[in-house]
Length: 84
Image (cartoon, rainbow, N blue to C red):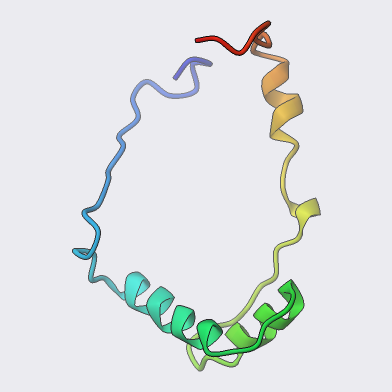
């Protein structure tokens, strides 16, 4: 909004425990899988999640993300102190 990319943004907060869609059920199923596994690193997590019949793991690494701090620093001034 501040940068003029959008005219309006809608924020929707779902009530905990009342989201029963397919995506929520899948995440719960995956959560049960990894909580029952002995996982020590990101690679092991990917291996466990990839064992699910309905999941195709597509790993995401730090290099896949944009440097948002540099981008935003071009448009916003840094605060001089920590007070609001």
